[in-house]
Length: 515
Image (spheres, rainbow, N blue to C red):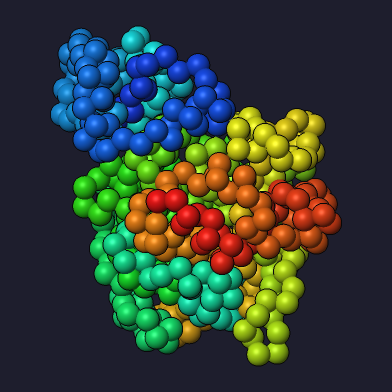
């Protein structure tokens, strides 16, 4: 993570009595030696449990580790102020000098990029035993913000000749699946906000009812509409695509803090919190895999595993920065969390319409030169079981194969993009940030028709690739290094658009057949 130099005073040691709050994410204490995404891994995670069953299991399994952390805290003069078994989470509080002693480091105050003073360790902390054996992540030792050009949204540039989200859904045959009654779609918003009046105006233009909406603040996250115009466009796009596609579904917007830890806390609240209980979660923010704190990535994967067990579908956009994901190192990168084997990754296409603008007559990989769909081969995740029969390409980085990104796609290009209302004016937006909520809302519609949540859909869709419109041309090469992936002329899976774009009628027939 990058850090700007302090504007004044430079790094200074914290006062010994400075209060510090730590959040510890515990591992599941059952031995976990299986590879993420392997057949045995996914088979175990797709066995459904209720929130209460999961809570009871956690209280039984984590009783010992919670006691160990409590004894460790007492040894160093720290106080346990919260235990959440369902989230595998403990909160500790204590003086800076005691935290430094426990983690063998020195905490320094620094000027933060977002303003104000934060703190960070002067040297790499050392996890005391038994934390190193039982914790996924210890957060609160470094409270600096991540620059927003790293944890970034995936709403692409403004475009032209746009369609309302409801019209886009009809083009793909999605609108025939219902209206989403009884469903709840969660949207993660680490930055920005939305204006309810914009949502009302967009719904009037689309001739759909305004959805029931709830704002949920996580940590210090708030609906800060007006503070960041680009982020506001991201949130408006997410909300209005869901509203236009599944207008009877409830929309829960989780406003989180603007860093990796904040996103983790937001997903955790969406999965385990009781305020909304969504059955679909939409994530349109991310970073290249390599930019993630490994501990936070592992902790987020653990929450995504819980989502699978609870029957919640998680969709994530694959990014708008082509195969290099805006990393100028002459290599290709995929975006996380779309690269997690527990997520449905969503890529982008460019569409051509007929004269009446009622039918898609051409569809290629979205690549406008500077922007285009992310996708590729994961560095951190092996080939998941659901992709075992897919002709995955070798990564140009090391010649190896791993989890292929994305799984599915839909329109994301600037031309024939998504017409939304922002600041009381209509604009046309683009990007894979539109694709993830489009797919998320589509899954909510299917849930409604089935009378039961689909949950983890990846294994099902890879068994029936005929449900998709194949994309056979285009690439996500960046314009400088000329590295990336191409669509296959035979229409097989590719690292730009995955299996392809939705053939709504075929998907509805296949996925609503068994409730």
